[in-house]
Image (tube, rainbow, N blue to C red):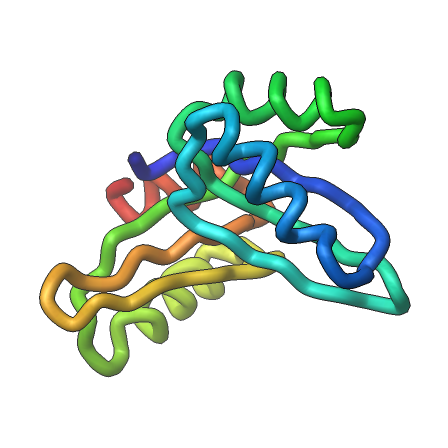
Amino acid sequence: MPKATHLVLNLESKPGVLAKICRVLASAGVNITALYAAETAGRGKIRMLVSDRAGARGALEAAKYRVAEEPVLVLTLENRPGMMAEVAEKLAQAKINIKFVYSTAAAQTGATVVLAVSNVDKAAALLGA
């Protein structure tokens, strides 16, 4: 899944918000496959890849959440020192800006990296994704 679309929610940062979002998705049978949540100035931004984007969006909207979508790259990298450096350097040389990144790393299966970049199509072609 090299090119993908993740969901984006801009919410108030307070206890229980993430729990409610996760419960809505769980009740709809939607699995969260990658998650990024951050806070700036009392506002929270949640970005997530899910197993069923349409189902997730429908469930969240039914629960009165505003949901946006954003294109991203999803890469599976070998879990070893320098792999992310290689990706970032290739993108930099091609003048592709990395807006943000979130990732997971499993010792045996490699690392899954989600990147939002200034030009998804160009980055995907460059990285062979």
